[in-house]
Amino acid sequence: MKKRVIWTNLLTQTDEDDIVKDYCECNEITSDGLTEEDKHNIVYDYIDGWLEAERINLDIQLTNPILVIGHLGMWNGNITGYKIIDSGNIKDILYEKCCESCEWYSDGYNVKFVGYHHDGKNTYEYREIRNMDNIDRLLDDLYHGKQVTRKRLNYYTRSILPKVNKIYGWK
Image (cartoon, rainbow, N blue to C red; front, side):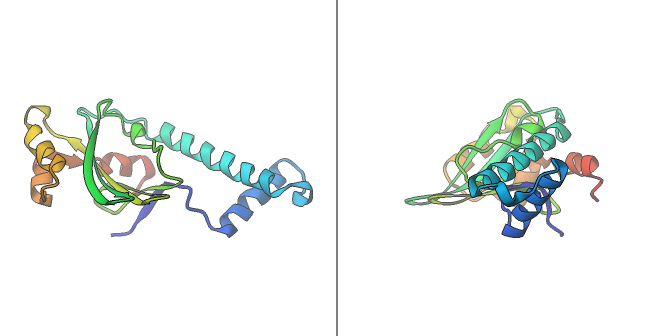
C-alpha cells in the first residue's frame, strides 16, 4: 500500500527553502535580511501551524479509547509498550513530546507514527479499542512484551484509518 503523510517535520533543505520563499512572497519582503535563525523560526512556525490545522481536521470522536502500541528506541535497547488515549478523539494522537523529528502517516492499513530522538527511533500504531471490558488480557501481553499477532490485535481493536481516509478523501 502507498504511504500517505498526515503531518511531518521531516523536511529537506528544499522544503525549508520553499517555506521561507512562500513566507517572503506573502509578506512582500526579501529573504536577504533574514538570518538563519529567522529562517529557522519561519519554518517551525509554519509547520507548527500545519500541525494545528491537522488537529482541527482530525477532530473525530470515536466510540472507544485509542490504543497506542509503541516500539521505543532507548539508550539501553528497544522496548515495546502501550498507552491508552482515553479521550477517543483522533486529534489527540497528534502530540509527541520526546521526539525532535516526527511523522504521522497511513501505511494503507493503519495510522502510524515515526519519531527520531537522541537515543533512537520510536514507532507507534494507533487503534480503536473495540470493547473496554475484555482488553486487559491484550494489554497485559503488550506490557510483558509478548508477541501479539495481527489476528489477535484485530480481535481486540480496529484501525482508525477508515475515519482518517474520509477526512482526506483517501481510498
